Amino acid sequence: MDQTIWLTLICYMLRGASTEQREVRLKKSTGSDCQTLPLGAPWTSVSAIECYLTCVDQFPDSCHSVVYNPDTLACTPGSTAFGPIETLPSSIPDANSNDAIYYLKQPVPACNANLGFALYDVCGTSACLYLSTSELNYTDAVQACADMDSILFIADTDARYSLFWYVGLNYLIQDTWVGLSDIAEEGKFVWENGNTLSARQASYAWSRYFSQPDNAGGNENCVEARHLVWPGIFGLNDWFCFELNYYICDAAAV
Ligand SMILES: *[C@@H]1O[C@H](CO)[C@@H](O)[C@H](O)[C@H]1NC(C)=O
Ligand SMILES: [Ca+2]
Ligand SMILES: [Ca+2]
Image (cartoon, rainbow, N blue to C red; front, side):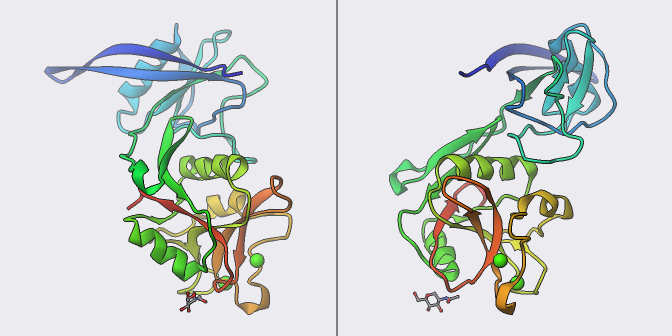
């Protein structure tokens, strides 16, 4: 059951001498569907809408969600919303209270369905992805994506990782390459867009069930999404680049 609703607001915001008018669509989600990270300490607001407007006023560039509790009137400013990631410390809302999260839809990338790409969306973050139907080694997968003006899937933020998690659990049926490797320098994992895997992401993204990454045989340098049993326990694993795997191309990250 979808327990979410979109609220459409017209916001009038005073910015110096000029008045900016824009439409804001906030989606309300209860329980544990969506989370965010707090941008600061909570304050009191009389409504969820006032909560959001105050958040934008205080954090014009980074407020993408709020958590509002109608019992306590507590309003907590939040960053980009993301779907549940197993254990991300300090994430809100608190699923055991009447906290509700209201999040803003992020820009939706153009998506060319003719090439087999489709939009996937979680908690307002979307990506235009191609889920392969055949297997290639890592270097051939990188090239296959490039040939379609795309890049192996990049999950370099909490929001994009949660989208990847959602796709992994709901659509993948085999071990699948993502755009992450330590080919250039052993132990230093870099996304195909050049961003380094952050320590915080590393704390939740690797499969804990086999203590990954383990650089088995001294030669595992490419990263796959791996299930213990498909569908089942899920996480990242370093793996042999020459092995054949399914792969995900990401058109939005180019
Ligand atoms: C991947 O396969 C191609 C042939 O399709 C081969 O030329 C290339 O060396 C292989 N890459 C790896 C990392 O094994
Ligand atoms: Ca390695
Ligand atoms: Ca491994």
